[in-house]
Length: 358
Image 1 (cartoon, one colour):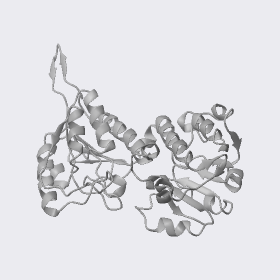
Image 2: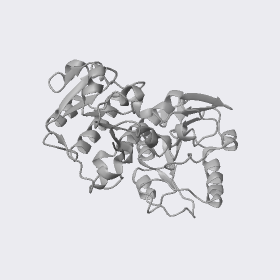
Image 3: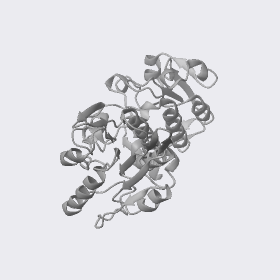
Image 4: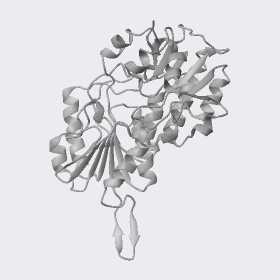
């Protein structure tokens, strides 16, 4: 079978790096890749020459048995694929009710890697966690670009500088990576999360856990946040406002799957923050955790810079591509047998990630 990799549109990453192409070839598949697909991840066509064949975009689309991408291809790709072909991408159908219905127009089998169940067996295929880890790390570096002061404590002949205070709202994969990065850079860090399981993880990284009683049970949420009562949210907003007033950096990562992101830093909280403070909102594309945040923009309000960016993983394309590629390889290892697509629909991972079939 032929597995095709296209150059991403408006994204510097590539779905399969050379070592990944070698692994997929080992499953009996032939890899075709569009010229320049890895250029923005600093992976030249030459780096693929021993593990893949460079082909024109149109030929890959019309001939490949499977096409893998990070961002879903539009009508240009789907309408030109051959009947019965397979497409694997991050369709995020939980954010848009029209995605699955639109895919039914095309004679392809569509798998969405962001629908892979977040179970122990599927950890090595979990693209959401992989990309969130990169985003959490990058969020701290992004904040530092705009912060007008040091992150660590500095003792100099000219005087001492106190360490910056960082508040992380949401201690999932992105939040924990942000905590670890800020701590390594010398900041004083505290974090908040509604999930009880996050407490020990936060403390293990040397940060203080801000606890609020009365959170809704999250044991059946598969690692995602759950919607909370208005009474809890009121207590949450009050405590966040108190902590935010002292913070130099706030990083927000809280998202509820399939719903608008909860507002954790409202206007009145921004009003109490110190001029020169920075907010990085990783949930900007799903409504935002912070008032005034706009996806892809840096907004300044009352001396506070608000960075809205849900695509921070794309800002580190080389390692993001490597992690995504590893996830893809582990995923295809359960789908390709002796060079052919072999779908075991009794397998939960395959069954739940298939969102449209011909």
